Length: 381
Image (cartoon, rainbow, N blue to C red; front, side, top):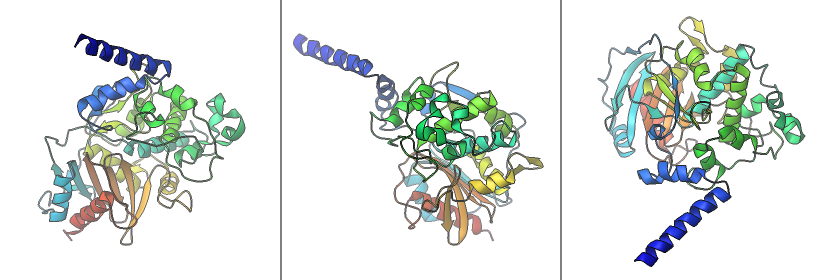
């Protein structure tokens, strides 16, 4: 037995030494946060295991309740989708009033849930605000104005707009279930800025869409430099407070004190408060009587950036449902904010499942939420 324990000790010690020798110590944090909590990827309550910066609510503006609030019976298909798909929050808003609202597994209207890549749409909104305020010159401003690393070669052609449309040409492999890769490293590192700045631009920027969390993280770093404040503080001042968010939210950091927000993901907020971005874009950048975003930027954001990827604009996913235009905020494990601009309908789904299938051919869980949520909203007419 003593020999076995000795060898176990030697193996564990050797593994730890190798991890540090090859600069992959982030794996220790990843194993502790994910695998030792019984998960195999990031999960919606994992913000509890990271440092966070607060996004503050002030003077909340609660959503109105529709006169038929929660009187509409959900379809059997929607009920099965929610109960079988580990939904935590499901919300349907029509004409700025909550029509249907249901929570599961102990969640309620004040429960925070990780946004994952829903945050990407928010970060591009923050970019739009920084441009509106003149803190970023425009979509064509070179990234090299903020970081000297991008002054040479293909990198010298990289613009702020390229980051927002995910066309940077950055070397990046988006994987969520592989332990040793750049996506995992960016999630668990304690120095996210350095991780991003060492990624090379290997293709000509601005040519085509390729999904990359690295693009949004670098965009967040540009916004941070341009505004001179943290992303959380900028979001608080320019969006969270003016839009009357009802609850404080949290944004995951790579480390405490002077840590960097994970711009590509990880805002923990309520379904009701995420829905506000759907309303903001439906209203072309206006919130009540205040212009938060320039209407021309909003329109640009929800139009395809490239012909060969008609499903993506500036941080927003674009679809068509039975002739109705739909734009969405999408996140890992099925975080969705779905907006029908012509019908003034917003659908929010938070939960914990792995999406399957595609919207374009009428399969996939996102398509089902679009379809069933829309049918529920239209059933009162």
